[in-house]
Length: 305
Image (cartoon, rainbow, N blue to C red; front, side, top):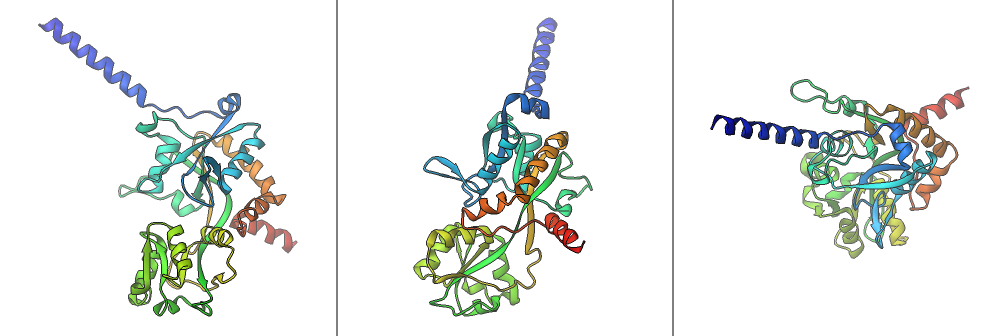
């Protein structure tokens, strides 16, 4: 019996070791990536105009950018579609440093549309530990901001968000615009903030006349305006008082052990920005391209000299 017990224990230990080894996800080193001939890029699924499927083919600004980054390194592109988890920290864990059990631990080499923000990069948990210590965030490639659009057949202009005390506006449920319009001015806009499952549905509601305006990220709004082709739908030029962060830069993320890949990607990206390729890429989707702060600072330094 003792012998049998020892055998069972040994078998359990072997199985535990096997499972532990199966959970270890290997981050591909830069040389291994180059040798493979493929760059694995994580990007959000069903997120137009940035990354989505159209007629079964990947489309969007981030898809095309990823293709150019891969080409700049002499590699083919492989897309890993990200279904958003509860937080961005979860997404980075699932695709950059740990992996997800449903995908057999497959990691991306780089992830796009990650905030390029010092405060986020050095965010700590309740124990004071860095949440994203295994992630390097780098390569800002776009400045994003919040944007409203309106139908001039129902609103003459939008000088201030205060106008939505009298006009209904559509927003995506559980989004920043949703929370903002429900709380600003002591909640006086809340009754006119209509919530929809997606930005596209909020915009469609404006076209149907259910609401007079809609609000989302500028890229989303500009793309929907370009798709609609209706001269009566216009961009608002108002500010958003008491909103907090209204403008932010977006970049990329790699595992902290893969800084060589980050340097190589930054070099390709810088050429795309300086040669005007990024501006053309965005224009192809009807979007205005705004330089991230890092490159705006460089332009000001050059102009100052």
